[in-house]
Length: 199
Image: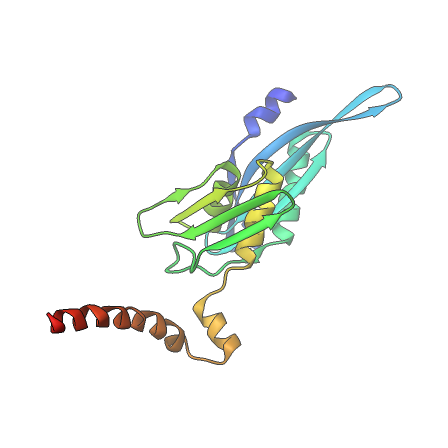
């Protein structure tokens, strides 16, 4: 059983849901847990699974059972039920840098230029691969526990917002928000121009 549990680590499978969406599930970690009873110890397996469609939707779930496949099945079902949608910039990275916390877990996610790839540790990498993000830089600043890391990553992703959603919330146009950022460097160039004019 223990060998079967080790072989399951890191595998990913593709499944059809409702005949349309292709969901990819990745096994983040599997742990053998023991319950002490009158006759001795009773062993079970606890699995942590991340599920996503690689198009901006992702979820995670934990499951526990006496056998490894059943624990993975339970975790996958829970992950499918709790999926969230994450806005992505150009379909490859985050719109902005964000931090997330859960318990002792703390993570920092940063948007990255095209071609950067996924720079992240094991549990976080599984989340980004199933989400469909191609360029991101992530750092775990707290607990190394896979459950805390995954939950902190989801807390960060839940805080991500697109310019369109921010603009609608503030009653402005997207061009107003992005235009201000493009216009910001112009005043910085003015003192240099004044110095060159004076010289």
